Amino acid sequence: MPWGGWSACSSTCGDGASFRTRKCIRFPEEELCAGEPRQYRVCKLHECPGSSVPFRAMQCSLYDGKPIPGSQARYQWVPFHGAPNLCDLNCLAVGHNFYYTFGRVLDGTRCGPDSPDLCISGQCLTAGCDGILGSGSQSDACGLCDGRNDSCLFVQRVFRAALPSSGFFGYKNVTRIPAGAMHIKVTDRSRNYLALMNGEQRYVINGDWAIDWPGAYEVAGTTVRYARDPDNHETLEAAGPTVEDLHIMQVLFQEPNPGIEYEYWLPREPHGHLQGDSSPLRQPHPRGIDLDPPRLPQPRPWTTLVPPTHLRIRDTTTERSQQGPTDTAQTGSCGRCQTPKGKSQRIRHYCQSDFVFRARILAKRPIGQETRYDVQVKHTYRNRFPLVHREYVWVSNACDCPQLLERREYLLMARRHVNYEHTLNRILLQRGSYARPWSPREDKLLRDIAGHCTRGSPA
Image (cartoon, rainbow, N blue to C red):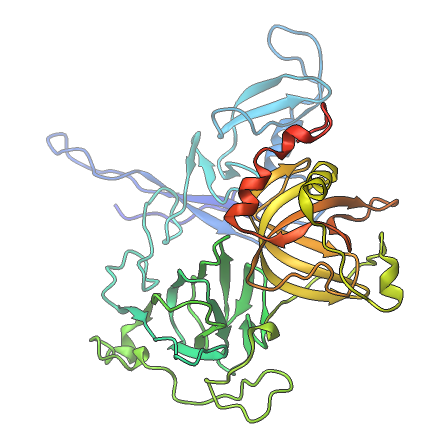
């Protein structure tokens, strides 16, 4: 028999489940009916008020003040999410370190606090793309439920462009991804940077000669996730579908382009003409855009040459007060930098430093009377406190002392700086700190220094 109507939702707000049934009518000699007699679907209602009690918490509270088997003690109960079976009503006794299982949760209860899946008859079920719990239906790459990827077109290309012999430090067009694209992925395995523009040719990521932090960016009706690993290899990913074109570009060539891989899916209509490798999507968008960096006259579209020092790490956070230990030289003339030399100076700085590490300078930014460097930590020799792959290193003057050049690697000996209010916790290089270009010789000289430090100090 056909399915009956859907029941009311198990919840009055938020997520819940409803069901429908059907009867099996057969003669005694016939085989049993195929399929399930009951079917469940997700029902989504308006958001619950902030003051409402979660569905699972409400079920636990029904046992407040009631004795449990084997004990006459009475407890208050709250949900416990650490038990093996997610669809048991596991409740923790408030003020005690044990939980009790009061059977199954009611149908339509979420399997976990952050899970979209629902419990039905003691099982945690995932809704298919058809909204039916446990159906296993999935959307294909074209966004069609239970589709076969035959209503859309898969575009997969590799952009290759040789670095001009004169060098190239501007924005270069890679491709245009048309509106309607889904499952977008762009990969660059070089130390060059990717940039992204929207359909109105406005920058979203790494534009205007500034490098953005990895993260999620809203553009073209979807979320683009920008990732960059410690080796500067980058990916751009978006689920789509997009509502406008996206333009992928490359900026600041630091090494030959090994190939930028990009792929996405498009509706076959109106993009059915993009079938072969002769697709016009492989070619850069023909329109030129004025991308000149600050104070450089007469730029040419797409091929503006600009010294890489114009590229900076974009600071999206509010700058806090950076008052800390500063050098007296910053109030007047900078004068000559004091460079530690000799074995005794190397040992003294090593033993008195909280951090000794090899770092690559990625970017430099003056902030007030100080200078902030974005560095990639390549190797640590001594660290009293944890270091991660990317750190900020602060220099307590604006005089380039010590002098650190971008895209170079240095051996740095720095101190930890925590101010009186404990609002700052940073790596600090002072005017006379040990900072020398890294070399195999410097590496060799450091190997046996730890033994010269005062016995008992952490290394």
